[in-house]
Image (cartoon, rainbow, N blue to C red; front, side, top):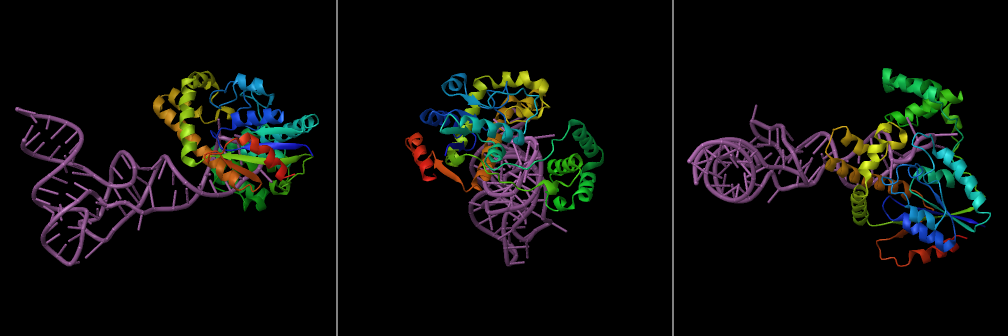
Length: 303
RNA sequence: GGUGCCAUAGCUCAGUUGGUAGAGCAACGGACUGAAAAUCCGUGUGUCCCUAGUUCGAUUCUUGGUGGCACCA
């Protein structure tokens, strides 16, 4: 059966270059599972593949959207699954590479059918939140969906608000839509996770941020500054520089924060990935030689 | 050189009228199903600078050091 090889790992671990080598070896295209590299005009800050790297192997879902375009894990599920099925007709292997946890799970397990919230409703609910606070949102959710009310993290505004939005949009309780599908795909999935020892990973992240600054991240962020309120730009590497442009901190402070937030993000990714028992881990700090040659073996183990 | 102030968590600092201590940030751990690089939650033992004294008991008071800052020479 044709195989989707999922390559994942925390930011800065070295996925991009390794994925290219693996894809070249398997004669596979690369499907990116990165919720930020999917946007245009953010290439430096998201460490997107370079033009040269993009030419080595065909890539999908890289620099595809404008920052103002709406996108979601669910849309990614639809788009990526149908693309992968199509590619697997002519390729025995397709490599999917990226670190966006929810995007990866959306493709591997699927997510529930939930109506898309239209802008008007979202605005209304947010205005209610601004005016009356979270308590009011909670109270409404409790009436519309007492089941989910008891499950949700009531301190997390985004979750509570979103649940209410869904209830209003769907005309039924959010909990009734949460079926935890675990959809079966028409292709085999093998997951390989790249990791490194913490200290080394952090060191790589710090150095990569310095390199981004050298490569012109400040100028890139400056051009995007007018669009700062877009969700796509609520992103490490940009939001800190926007604070600097606002005059709220020095450039050096912003750079330190970018490093720190990137490290925090890497840690969060590892927390998420550690729960996934299907991942075959490769620790790149442990003198692994010829990782690329190891991958086909891993694929066989699971066939 | 003299005088004054300061020395407490990785950092910035609070505090204990003498009963061995706590905030913010960092760090670490966790949650996560249509905005996810988002959003949220949990975790605080540290020679309270060193030394000698007073005391049942000192991080807290006193002596003497050491280091830092300020002012005066």
